[in-house]
Image (cartoon, rainbow, N blue to C red; front, side, top):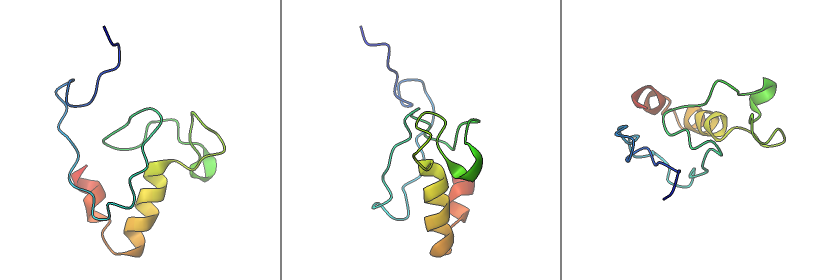
Length: 74
């Protein structure tokens, strides 16, 4: 039996469709509704300290195209 639970399996609502499907990086901790509490200074990932948090990257990309309201829906 798998110990990995998807957000759907846990009964958590899935996030709204992304405005730009090209920004499809996944969080190593499978955070589907926003960054974890471990985002490091400079926006780096808690799990992989040399990787920028995908949520930080997504926010920056959404800000460029004027769609940060998407983050409020998540």
